Each structure stands twice: as structure tokens, then as C-alpha cells.
Image (cartoon, rainbow over all chains, first blue to last red):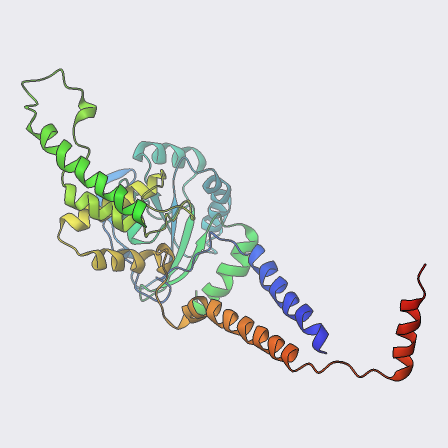
Length: 174
Length: 166
């Protein structure tokens, strides 16, 4: 038994390293999970006179999708977001235009379709910092009471949608 | 450590001497002065605090880089945010809690000592202690080693081998 001890020890270490190798370093736990969504008020793309605030969504489950017109992986997930919005299988999605030109966002949405109920325009990126955004795309699920329940870093694909979002939305009673 | 102190000292001396000179330059009277010669920031003390603090902070884009060094756009925004907070009179501790409440302890290069990080901080010492324990046990086993029992047949065999020179 005694002579096997170093091997056992080594295998445990290998186990830890193997696990670490397959973790996504971008998936940083958000300190907002279970906490109130940060508030803001921003003009929306397409209508600078109208302001959007998370308080507008109070009482319903909604999603905040942080995106930008230049962002390639946002375009990848855009197709799925369109399908979700058209089939009404997802809660309303708000698209935060993060640090990119209003006009670019407007043109892109006009050309490829707009899956969002509102597109607040975060030109300075300050709202992004308030939400702990590290890059685009990022998606948050906010419950009826305005509590952040889920954060996903990176594009949403069918797999992520079915295995990460759908169970959480069911749990919230969407 | 000393080199860092020297570095900081030199920077302070440089800033102390260069900025008043630049600031005293009457901008309107000397249009020949290149705009790049203007001070890059308004408040030297805040800039020094910002530089000092953002060495301890992680850039959330290029995760192994300090916020002070990172060329990422978001890092620039975050430095500006810290600068604004400091200008508004916030202490370093308040700035840190502003950032950790948004990005988590992940932004700190030195994670705080709390239940989830106990293993992280104490782990290396536990392993070191374990190693020392094994070492002492090995030493003691060697010291108390009395020699293996040898019988006369084995001694005779050894003597035969020694005599039997090639």
C-alpha cells in the first residue's frame, strides 16, 4: 500500500490539472447573481428622445444581451436571438449597444433584423462597467423582482440555450 | 523591491520637476510647443495613486495582465473610472470595493483571505509542512537503522566473492 501512495497522490494532482485544462477562463463568476440588477437610464438606438431603464421591465422576466455592431460572435448568436424573438419562446430581450456608434447599430439592426424590445445605447461603456461586462456578447437573465439570475459569457448557441437558459427560465417560471 | 522604490522615486522626481515647467508654459504665447508636450493628466497625486492601485488589479480582458499595463480599451475605461472616483474623493479601499462589487474578487491580483480562499492561501504551507514531516520521518528511520541481520552463510558467500578476483 505504502509504495502506491505517491502514485495515488500524483493521480489526484493529474485529476485537478485535467479539470483545470477544460475550464473556460472567461467564465468568471459574476458577483451579481442573486443581487439586484444595476440600474441605469440610457437613450435607445433609433430614438434618442426615449430612455430605457431596467425599471421599465419590472414585473417580468427579461434578458439583457450586451452586444456591439463590430462584434462577430454577436452576429453568430443574432440568428438564434431572431428565432427566439420571432417564435416568442424567450423572454423579452434588451440589447445593450456597448461602446459602438449609434448609427452602426441602427443600420445593422435595420439590415439583419431586430430581436430586441429596446436597444439602450451605452456609448461610454459606463453602464457596461456597472454590470461587470468584460466583453461582447454577454447575456443576463433578470427575474420579475429585478434580481440577476444568470450570466452567460460568449455567444448563445442552441446547446447553451437549451442546457443553460431554458432550465433557469423554467425554474423562474417563465 | 529596491528597484521598484528607485523606479517610483525617479518617477516622482521626474514628475515634480517636469510638470511645473510644462504647466508654467504660457500656452497661448508659445504656439510652437507641440501638443504632445502637455501634461497627460491633470492631477499628479491622483495619477500616482491610480498607477499604484492598478498594478494590483487584473485587466478583465487580458486576464494575466495588470490594469496599469493593459492596452485593452476596457482597461482604459476602467482606469478612467478609477480616476473619476479618486477625483470625487474616494479612498483606495472604496475604489477597490467599487470594482469588486462589479467584477468580483477576480479583479484583485491578491485575493482576500476568506473561507473560499483558505485553501489557496494556507495550502502551500500545509504541503510544505507535509514535506517536512516526511523528511523528518525519513531521517529518523535512517538514524534508528541498526543494520540488516546477516547470517554466517551470507558472510561466507561475501568472503568467497571478495577472494575470487578476476
